[in-house]
Image 1 (cartoon, rainbow, N blue to C red):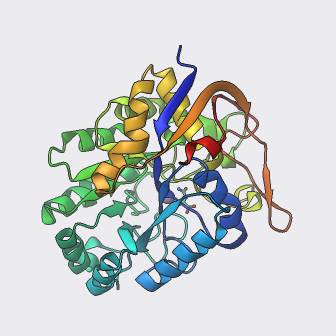
Image 2: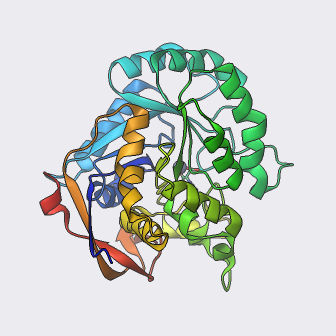
Length: 353
Ligand code: NCD
Ligand code: ZN
């Protein structure tokens, strides 16, 4: 049995870092494991210009613990009014790595999002030309569509036509949750379509939201799906296919906002991210494919250099904290709170060379 696992330093290709106290609390958890992260732009107000993104990147750098090497990769929040030149300039200046398409109303802080992809056609043309990846929250927002069908309907009604209209646009379907998404990605032979997969969608099915009562800390968007879909995601993640890579979608919210009559969506997985993925790959007998998923496939797709340095995980039971306090009497409840995981990251001091 493998007891220690040393991987090339991984990247998180889908991360919410927030701002202020939340940023200062959440960031060290990510930076101790990951060399880089694609930082989501759904702040309030959202990050829509390269100047906003450069300023946010600076706040992230300032919030980093001293001596921890970590590179935030910034994204542009697309709106109906986004201008191609803003993206071109942000890309040329090395500020924007990618742009994020939130269908308006699909998820947390998506109210400024895109109401129809036709509205951003000029932006997508520019992105296609400069090779900038489009990151998609792939859920239909039509209120008639059942919440559990939103991803499948989005793929059919929106993603398929978008890919046909922009045949060279690089697209990442973020945080996929269904066998439909896996089939769609597997079907693509062009290499310009990829997907991120979160730890919660690999470890839990939708029963987890209702286990003994309503479990707000298992609520995220896209929502957890049935077991059949979880198994399809597992097969995809461990397959070794270069189209799948690590993106935690770690999304911290103050516990009071989650434990509420109208609790918000988002799971704070950063504290246990790599260990959670290792647990999945281990359970599937596929630890040999973890490094590709966590440390190679994403940078390959984005055209980024591979990281140097390594991280080491060891097979040792860890008890996950029930809560993490921050700010003024607020706390965050991490993914797998109060539960145990069979893997533990070794302190990174030796692994950040
Ligand atoms: C994210 C958030 O809280 O910002 N929430 C979530 O449930 N994943 C937004 C998102 O990625 O959909
Ligand atoms: Zn997200």
